[in-house]
Image (cartoon, rainbow, N blue to C red; front, top):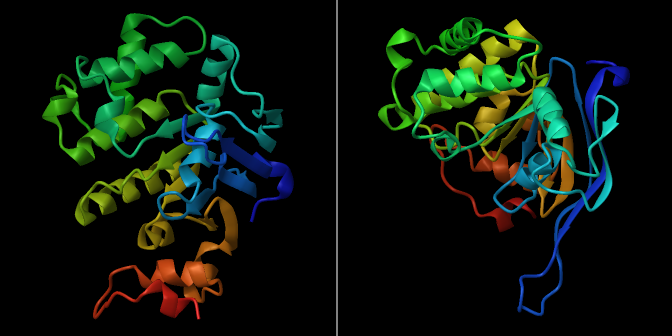
Length: 278
């Protein structure tokens, strides 16, 4: 395990409160409450929980898509709790942390060819002067590295499969050469065989580039395959944390046990959560 001094991301007592829906007369909604974790160099940390548990809100705060209500959120020693105020800061932050969404189609420009999508990111995040030829060569190299060869470069997003579009989204994240990639349910919409291909690709990228992952998921089978450590969130709070293999081998917390019991396997039968919580 990495030393504490190697932590890229540090969250301390993180909190996010959304206002009550307009006209509802209800109470503010606490989406994240007292969440703390660290992400180290060359590590994959999974944040696990069902829809509504606050996992995506944590990820969105990290990349500046949501403001922080309370607590501290640091990336390489710099606070992100205050949000992004300048375009230059947003671009600099993007070179440190990139986000891959569950649905790549909605985040890709449907009017751009694949090579142009990646070239735009290479140009935007490149350091110093770059010629159009070097930008294009860089984009081609990145697409090759995610398994999208020359025959894909002139295609539009709608001409690709779901797995191929996710490879494009990963390539676009890599174009910024980030230290951290946040993967928010990045394989949830794919069938099992394509999931395995994307997870193997992510493992290869991590080994080659020594990039760290913050992997958001509700699927413990996927989490077990890719992550080193995990935290489990329920209703905005951390209810379990530790080394992934140890937690999944013998989960102690009822919620973690319920999530593990929901993983399909040979002879699997659904078990009501109330029974697991006894």
